[in-house]
Image 1 (cartoon, one colour):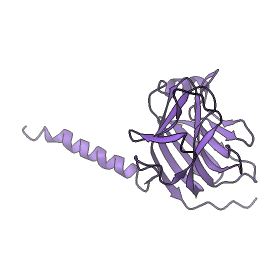
Image 2 (cartoon, helix red, strand yellow):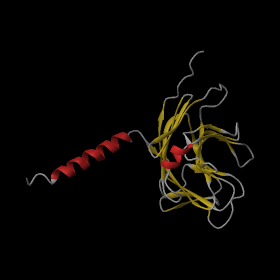
Image 3 (spheres, one colour):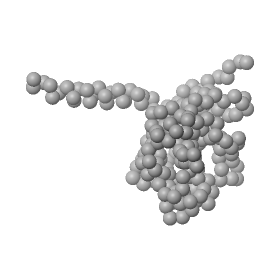
Image 4 (tube, helix red, strand yellow):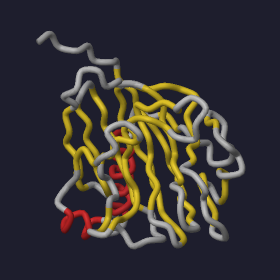
Length: 220
């Protein structure tokens, strides 16, 4: 009977091993202390308490601003946590994107963060500065029940392999999209967005990525 108390410790150890195996192959894109590996207007982005903080709580954000990765990615599994604080309700993470020359905007896919009149847009797939529309989303009532309240952390995952893009919010799949347009780039940079509008901060943490060999397009 004296050996029984050790069982929970054994299960805990097995659980930890399982979690580490699940994250195998991932590389951190944020060291928790600096903005190394990223570029953008430093007046809009800073590091606080182990998170990248975009925006302000005491003034409006005049334009969409992005903290952009110095590295480009094609096929990958991207995971991160985010939360919104303040009056505003819009941010997002760009991927397979590029900066528009001599402009504050980026062009490309965006994993959306925030809300609109119908409810949350967390985990929706938006096409920033290109087709300018939602490309894919889960049923609104379901996503409304999956998202944590404003001010709390939400976990997001973006899996991009060839023309297929999948997104999960807190472990629930919100997007399963296949790009049909052949001229849309399937590689590019990442970008952490703070949207123009009312005072708002978007906090990003635990940003990590696992890359795959770029898939060759299939012959028609």
